Image (spheres, helix red, strand yellow):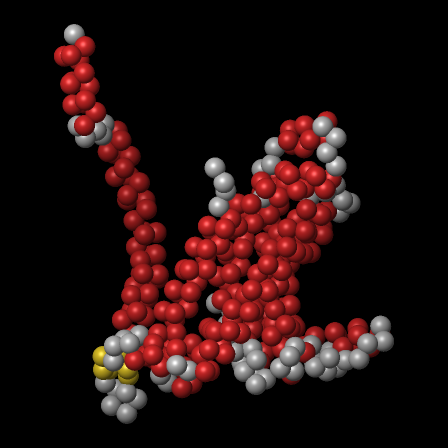
Length: 307
């Protein structure tokens, strides 16, 4: 009996499972509902990416308007250019500093405002307000505040410190832009960390307190490990946003002084619309996307939960 049943079981296991009519109907409905979103994503993401990759192998003659296939010449020009090396180094160093700062400050504020503070909702709203302001408006606000006779230098004079050049100094301009970006981003990413804090079971803290764990032990052993996913998301999203930062540079410094604030996105704009070399600009876009993909994949791997 066992010898007859066993081959049937093996045969049944190897046969493809047939979907029930209800499951097929649900799958068709899901495909119909998802189709518009997939179509929009393909049109707005995939098509421009493929177009950029294709155009990066071409050179447009401004004199004749003819596009010629030049192979990897645009990439060879980029990687042989000292200007591109400088822009790439500036962009990487800027991201290496600004993204961890935003993650740490967002997490610290979320931990603070998750406590039972008086008027916690008001403080949370005030911190979030800069995130609701358009980037161009934020740039104009900070541009006014960082003027030689602006708000920041007036505050420095009040405490007896000398005024600072901020955006007109090659050693302070990039840091000033970083402060402006962090000011606009911290409140937004803080909300994601607060949402992560709400998902941590209270029973874990109660058990830890019964065992005599203090605030620091609960933070290190419970809170931060269970915040790994929201913090990883914030880090990845911040990295993408910082690499694509363009408006502050365009509005405040236009890459100066002495190219100290020329980030990768602004250099793409310069090559495309000021120099007029679309092939090099598209090659730079491809390099930027490849760099972002590698960095984000590395961050996901570093922040992956151990199983």
